[in-house]
Amino acid sequence: EPEVTQTPSHQVTQMGQEVILRCVPISNHLYFYWYRQILGQKVEFLVSFYNNEISEKSEIFDDQFSVERPDGSNFTLKIRSTKLEDSAMYFCASSDQGEGTHEQYFGPGTRLTVT
Amino acid sequence: SQQGEEDPQALSIQEGENATMNCSYKTSINNLQWYRQNSGRGLVHLILIRSNEREKHSGRLRVTLDTSKKSSSLLITASRAADTASYFCATDEYDYKLSFGAGTTVTVRA
Image 1 (cartoon, rainbow over the protein chains, first blue to last red):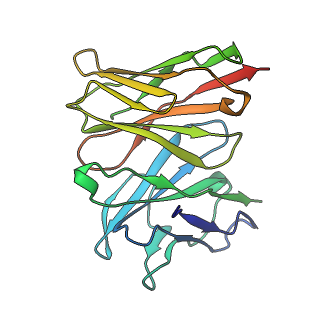
Image 2 (tube, each protein chain N blue to C red):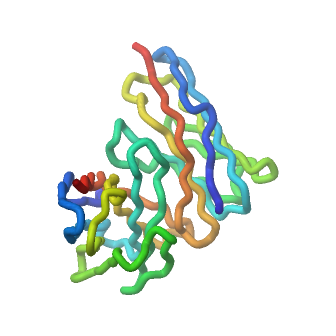
Image 3 (cartoon, helix red, strand yellow):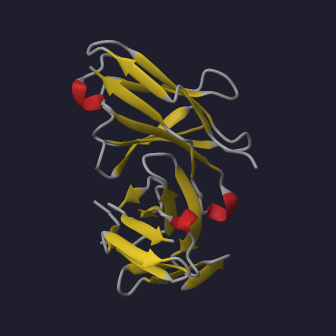
């Protein structure tokens, strides 16, 4: 069964460093998303992406964040200068139009630890 | 903003029993989805119910939706130890960005 994959599973970085989190969405999906979950808190929407552009972003997704689909399979989230409060589990998700329902399938997540 | 809120926060049941959890939300929705998360791992999609549907089944899962009360319930029948996890409802308002609740932690005792 097709699934969303994410790498790395765990990333440790120092404050101020840039990180790139990578995702490979399900191959026939056209809509891509990033969410995050700070330990013990709710899953929060960050950004959605369709047709090579951002379709929606939350207030969390400030200028430090960017997304890219560099080729036909990968979808990346870049944090330019990490802060301690960026420590969280980051989930990538993808969906297709599928009768307009947009069932979103999530990857296993990347645990980002900023020290 | 649109959010699902689950109730109860935690549930402990014996293997073989049914588990029921509820989700309430605040505004009109397009779809409501239920997810499972095992101990800090990924979110597994369980079931999606559209705003014009009232009930949906998938294996041992039964989901209901009452848009007049802005609530949904997830029933897991004949629970197993492997059902031990956190369960989240997530809603979208036609914009496909999901709003998640805080989740119900289910523990199934052998």
